[in-house]
Length: 290
Image (cartoon, rainbow, N blue to C red):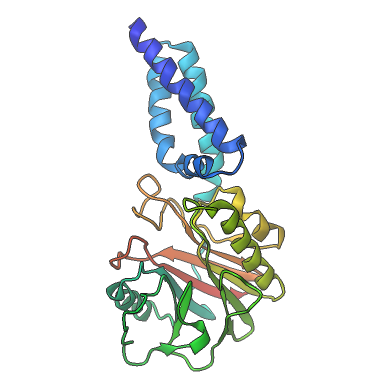
């Protein structure tokens, strides 16, 4: 029993150090990875803490409470859901298709099933011709390619790619609502963390000049990340999707929610769609100006 207590103390102590480091440490690739895994690691931390209490491993119990408590407090507020919008003014689908044409076609089919007239695609195939289904078109030639391509089956949408945004976000006008679609840099590539911060700040700047406005896309960070501070300072709020993920697995304990929609002066509903053949799941976004 003593060996079990010592083992639990070592494991939970290391877990507490890692949890504190991911929260308080400098924003690097390492701390970013640790912070991203909070949702996946919360349940194992709770199990270890429970075992520590049962076998009366005092320090292991304390360390486990620190880890699981911080992760629960950090993640639970982001696991609510949005209220349904039965008659939205606008409906769109965002999908990172990983350069796979089949994922584009499956995303468009999902958009049609859900009554969406706009599909925003991240990681459009490079060099591979994509023949769009009947009724769908590029919103504009400037809004095709990397990092976002805009497709529509409506004729009233306008799209531009502002030169002020170095990442290449696209800005769409849907009646009186502006949508900024972006694909921020992944944090696990060279200079990924500072580049992602720059990309999100530029997207926030583009959207902040307009109202009502929505920012949607692959943000490459989880809901509890401090990377969202530029959007929040500009008055944008995330549309939560409950305990769902959009990358790798579809659930909070098996994947990460890194595709998001933020809105200002709008009501947003966001839902996770079906598997399309990409490593990301599409998200459905319904919009009503507030």
